[in-house]
Image (cartoon, helix red, strand yellow):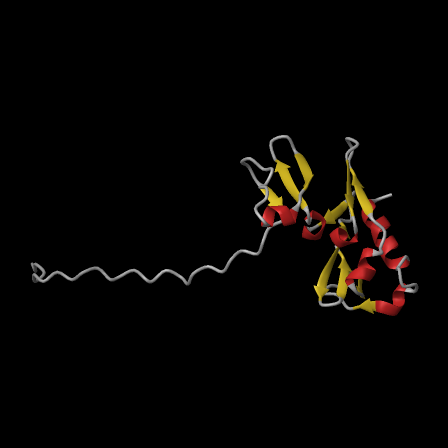
Length: 162
């Protein structure tokens, strides 16, 4: 069985408050599955894991497979790709450094202490290359745009004419 329907069915049928239908909230898209709930209620949803063909398993709690659409409305963040798998997004990468090895066609999920990184107690495990860091802070606002270039200085000598 494909992973996305399993996670979706668990999300839709096993709510910690009882009848899931009593808290349905409108999402952005027709296939969104959203509920009004507190963060404490969200934490009571069952954990899930991704199982890869090589035997690797990555665990996710509900804060990593759900995202807050708006204050007090949480939506499932795992989607069926309608083929043989699932689409996971940024919610699933929280508290992991996700490293993409494009040469070897591999991906790594490295658990990370985001609080420690933000407090500068330790740095990223990544040494060169590209990753998506689930611990990223919001980018600080940039200073305003640079001033426009000055027009070229005009010559004080008259232009030559033919």
